[in-house]
Length: 117
Length: 238
Image 1 (cartoon, chains in turn purple, blue):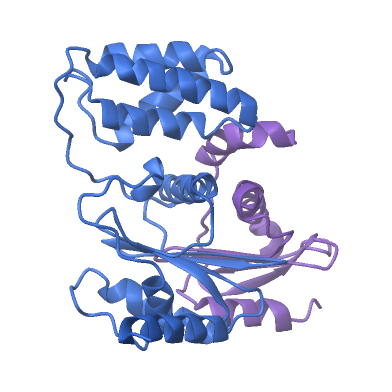
Image 2 (cartoon, chains in turn red, orange; image 1 turned 45 degrees about the vertical axis):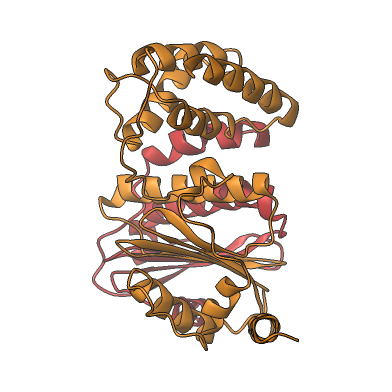
């Protein structure tokens, strides 16, 4: 989408237009390695924005941390929790969208243990 | 061995047993303690990115963020926000996350109350690995010192207004950015700091804004050139 050298410059521009929160009334786990259906489809935009946000953040953070590829990311506010788990090939595997304030530990546990059926 | 050195050694041991690599605590925009194992430029880049992430989340959700967490192959980063404080905790990927999260939340919820931090908290121990900065120290990580940007306006003896200074900065930045993009970034930085652009410009604030903008340039040699030009312009402000 953007060349790496442009990412820092465009980081701000891209995310200003995103909608990185969602109106859901329950915690939803969305398999990203399957065709999205039901809740997953309706939350596609939020999920995409979350992936963009975490992806851009990891690129920028890795400039200074040099910590390797992203395995999991979480963004949480007062009434929104969004998180993504990545697989061993660094592809997004599963997302979580919740209206609740979950702990990081709980969120990661939910993401890691959820089945994808 | 002195008691203080023994205490520091114990703190390092306990922090390491929890997998903590370092931490940084900001209270009311001031760096309270910082033990992140990063160079000043990397620390600056880290804080700059976190600042942008927080601003973007707030722009979208209209509420400030509470937690950012990113687990990488070689480290994990936990960032907690409260109304008055921000805590950045860097740990090993296999760190005891559950315990660290609880400890970090205790720190962030009480950090603004003097003397409230318990010394047996592993995050407090990690923070105590760094000497507390002397009061009124201007941190070398310019835009990083304040994630919330609620600093009082600095005094100035300059005759140059902020409008003139920002035009000068724009002229420098348009060597690598479009004019619209440069103007927008500078305008946003000035707005975040709550600066009245009709007032005289002060060199320290200008330097912070200049550093914030130049830090966005990925190419190191170009960035260094721009930083030099910003410093020269800053010297003209006095």
